[in-house]
Length: 246
Image (cartoon, rainbow, N blue to C red; front, side, top):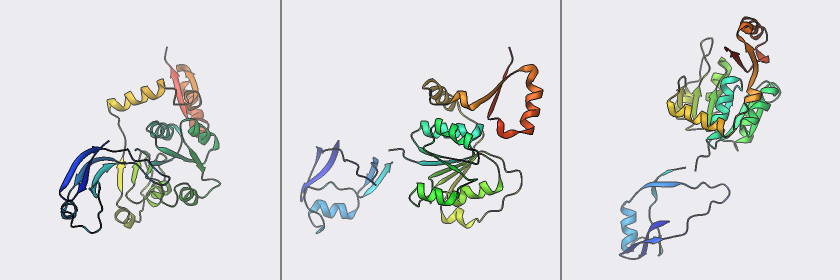
């Protein structure tokens, strides 16, 4: 890769240098812009006692990080399962969260690296352990309960993102201090763009989504009223229902 190299006082050149090797605990950044300040000018002049030659200058870096987000998806039903698969397809480390072991097993097949059953484990303790104390970079809420709406804000990392897909069925009281203290981006998600559908098609073509497990019931049109009644009685039995029209 190319780099600006200070070869000595008053001497700078463009050289081909070895790409950096990422060590454990480090990330490789794709540098977009580098700002030069007075310290860099003094380095070029040979007046910076902290700089030896040759030296690659540039400590004011604007860069993009090699995507490595940790994404926690709260709720692994039909909608949440899609969020798990989409995040995993984009190379994120995904944590699936639910109270149903069967749904969590399907989430693993959809790409979740880790799963947490909050019926038997503490969400905060598990997320803390899995993220080395930082919290997930992104939390996607796909249930719609006041407690999970709050948990998303409480558990997400500093400067993290919270995405709400589920609807809360009642008003939610927040500790709003966390919005500012953590410098959060809080988003709602409802619709999709054409490129999103193309991504889904590519994911299905690559067999990266467990269709057989996600589609739990296929019924004829005349069976639709009965299956709606059954879904109403036992919602946990169903993930995705497909109705055959023809």
